[in-house]
Length: 370
Image (cartoon, rainbow, N blue to C red; front, side):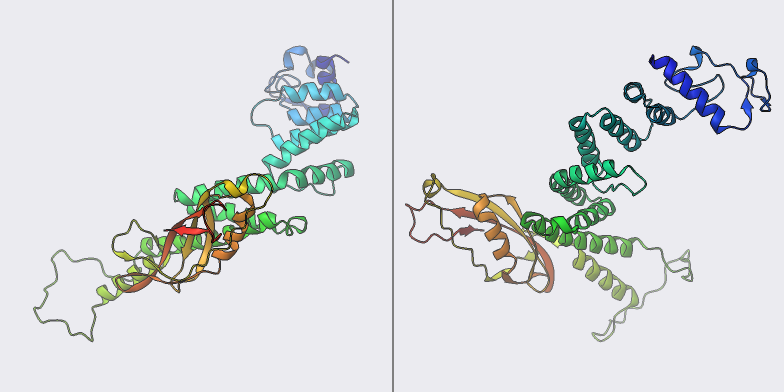
């Protein structure tokens, strides 16, 4: 069937079936018994922006769906290839997959569904959809989900680092939700990502709370400032008394310290002291050239006010056989907390780890270089 003719037929069927009142080209309306010349359809009414009779704007996906239901699968695919901007991409991809399945082009349909699952990893098809389409989408989603989760985690961490905390919280929440699905809970690598996502989500929420505290408006009952400064007496303030303003400032500073993560760049902060920083033993395999290589990497810790490690990430990986050992060990390391003005604070600590070749050292433990 010629594409233009098929679209025109589909438009006529959709227009007649969807409306009880015909729409005239001049904007008026007539009843069901209107003459043919009041409902003219010509090729001039077919365009990318509106397909149908002059003055009538039809949903492009509705036209594609009509073609699909009419078994005009090739014409439907051609119409999908020329959709205008702003059309629902998810619905278009599902219709494309259905047409491909009807044409027995199963591999092409799987690629379309994999593309949809990669773009929308949170998407799940409902029971109202074709059972075969739902089954194939689930299989495609299961294959692409691990890579999609890692990409979403990287995007969330980037949002956190540039200060877009609200976006980071939402993205970390999606990461945690996806990894919580039954088929992914046994993946060790994704379990580590989940722990990191939970830690970053907690930090982002804390920083959002601190921002809300410092930017919250003054109480509505507060008195407006006077035009003249208040008189201040010269009597010294006793040690047992603190002015309300100073108390409020102290609370604000304490809240800020609780949310901010300090690092070696902060000169007024005393770095954490090591209590237990035992690096796991490195036993290189006998196969390959692992025993003659030096591996180096960087592990980053977030140490809280009690000296506990609340987050571990690898800034620079060493090798796949040692990375997970290091991450698991680092979660149990203990420190004396960092101090700022004598008060414990959170601290971001980076440690260089070097694994030496077996023929150079007798002790095969990883060597931390702070």
